[in-house]
Length: 308
Image (cartoon, rainbow, N blue to C red; front, side, top):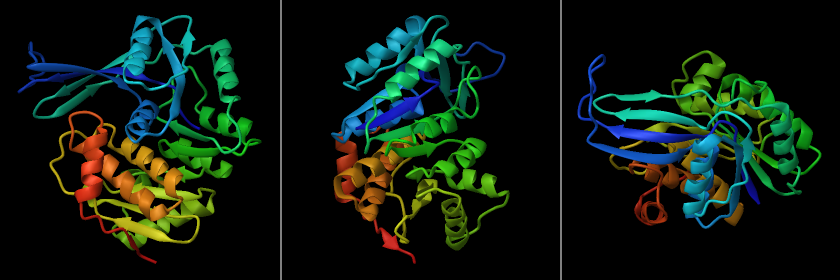
C-alpha cells in the first residue's frame, strides 16, 4: 500500500482575472476550487493511474470537512486526523498576467492529535510506501519528517521525501527510497549553480552518498535526470506541449514514478511515466487525468537514455 502524508493540506481557491491591479478592486472571470497539498496531489494522480493509496494528515473545522468530502467525491481514500480547533487553510491563487499565491497558516496541531496520526501510521506493514511531502505546520517540530522515519524505520517501509533543503538533507540518514529535488533546489542545497548534466549528476550522487537510494531531479521543461541505486543514470527530455499550470506537476511526477516502478521495477519505465504525469498536469488547468497521461505516454517521443 502507498500512503501519502500531507501535514499542511489546504483548499485551493483559484481566481482567473485578466488583470490584477494592487490596491484596487479586481474582479475574476472564473473561479475554481480544488483540494490542495503535495501528498494529496500524489494520491490523486495514483488514483488516475489505477493505483490505490491512502491520504493521511490533519484537517480542521468546516473547511476540513469540506476537504474530506472533496476527496471522497473524487474516490481518493483518506484517513485524516480531525483537529479539535481551527480550520483547514484556504490558499488563494490569482491567475492573471502574473500568478500570485496567498497561502494561509495551518491550524494548531496538539500532541494528542499528533499521537493519533502516529497510531494511523503504525498500521503500515513491511513493503508499504510512505510519501512525505510538503510544508510542515508551525506548531509541529521542523524535524517531524525525520521523527516519523526514525519511529518507523523498524518496519521495511519505503520512504519518499519531497521537501525543501534542510528537511530533505536531514532525511537522508534514514535512507529514503526516493527524493525529488528540482534543479533549483539542488543548486540551493549545494550553494552553487549546476551548469550541465555532469554537474547535476555529480550533485545527485553526493546525495546518494549521504543516504538517498534514488534521486530524481526535475528539470522542468527540460525533462528529468534519475540517479538510481543500481548504478544507472537515466535522463530524458519532457514531452512537448503548452504549459498552462505548474502547480502539482512535481507531485504528479512522483506519483507516476511510484506507479511505474511498482508495476515493473524498471527505473527507465518509471522515469518515462513520471515525466508523462508531470507534463500532463503542466498542460492542464488542474491535475492530469488518466486520458491525458495515457495520451502523452502513447504518443510522446520520450527518449529515456542511460548517460553513464
